Length: 383
Image 1 (tube, rainbow, N blue to C red):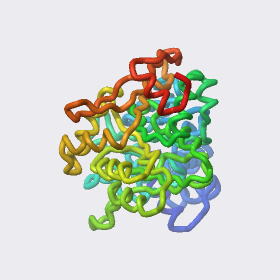
Image 2 (image 1 turned 45 degrees about the vertical axis):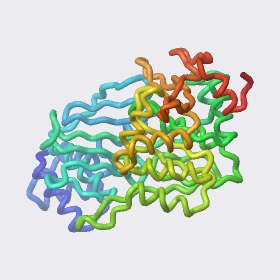
Image 3 (image 1 turned 45 degrees about the horizontal axis):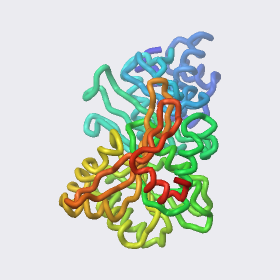
């Protein structure tokens, strides 16, 4: 069925306010002067379902066991990730226009617009799925859609250990850092499992402590009875009403948090987080993109500069605020796990560095490194 005919049929069904099925589709085809046959009715019904309900042809992929991401590169290339790297799927679209219509409809369901004037969107769908889309006017080979599927349940530290992501020593260190209210960051690349690990660690926070979580797009959902989650808001069509990460961090400080959590530090809100960690808010944590624990100071320095904080002030704040950095990695086989744990140290020159204290090999087996005694002290595990 041609796209223009499908649009006419969709408009007729909408105008008549019908909950459509094959009988209503057949009636609509007849009224519009289109071919009515068993084959045409079935084809039109299938096309309507694919383009009007949920995520269309991607809906089934979102519900496959273990799927974390569904990626669309134009009309012909659809991939999923379920923990073993990207897999190409047989699912496809008739044209890039169909991909664009799906992307625009998903954006609208999140209260956002996607058109030539606003050719990209980053939003959270009503079911919690994170949507990112870029139109073909900017992307090759066509309109691109990225869907990040929220975890269907919270994982536990024991499940990470039994699954081979961490060993017993690493699990004890992580639990100890949380129990002793150490301030830490979880670092890694995109899709490495930063948010998953942070959610696991937040679930270890004692029930009598209040967690206040600030995120750009809500992903953290720790298994904890007293967690307050706040999410940024983009500006409306008039360019007003935006709520930034900096706004939310400042509000969170007035909400009596026992643990202040910034889901992903990616801008000037770092300045507010560091300030909060230096004003009696112990156990603060968050995630940040970095290649290794050693690269974290440079990354934080760059983010602090966005908030107007100079290099010396940034290093002084980091040295006083942070205790440890947990770096997660993703192997070539798709296995995610902790790769390094480092501790924060300040040099005589006032500059901060992150020194390795625990190193984990590709099989998840850990071994103590140079600053192990300091990490053991922070986490309360035997050195």
